[in-house]
Length: 320
Image (cartoon, rainbow, N blue to C red; front, top):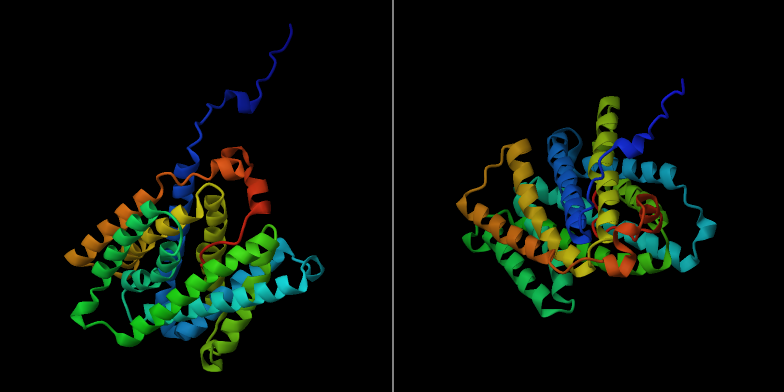
């Protein structure tokens, strides 16, 4: 008797419909922002033991080591000016992450994230397209509602650090455009992130780093993957599907996600005004996804995940 011919496993599985490029890109961007904010919220309790500078330095240094091992960039593959551009990109990344952690220890996570968002907001305002500017204006209203600067009770130094992080983020976005045009795949990221790690380690005081223990090192490795490597991969994939302007305004959701992470992880309860600000930035983020599909530009969903990561441009957010 002839044995039954085995069925190929893939033929027995139901075909899952692919999401449109803009919907899939939006979900990936949301996943990226969620892991970033969760990692930042989990980092805040460690500040009491390592300080904001030491906490940032270890997290970023681990991310740099991880990317060096994963990508293994070779300097001979880079032109001299590309190495310089990646070094500047790493320094700007370090500045953003250090300033933001200094802000987070003085302000609620949602407020600090909202102020930091003024960086990409300014980049988006400078871009073409009237419709995008309407959504950007709505997001700006949400940022103002979240921060309520007219009350005057907010920590001035925290605001200053958050605005410095915003300026670094804007510079980072502009620099990634140059690096992405000249360096392929993850090589630019794998070169710039170790530079960021070195800068943060230099800035961190010996007193902070002297309190490091093996359990803390292990915890920082996990946070580096959660709030650094994983979000970068998700952003790379999202940027393959979304127009740059749509992605930039979609990042307006980050203050809302930060507000939720602060509530769940840190117990920071937002008031009604903060909730209203969340609704404004959420509305702006949803509006930004309309007409933002990059499928016609980059091949859309026909590109495999492996080739997307190989050809990806640098991320729009230095997120470790």
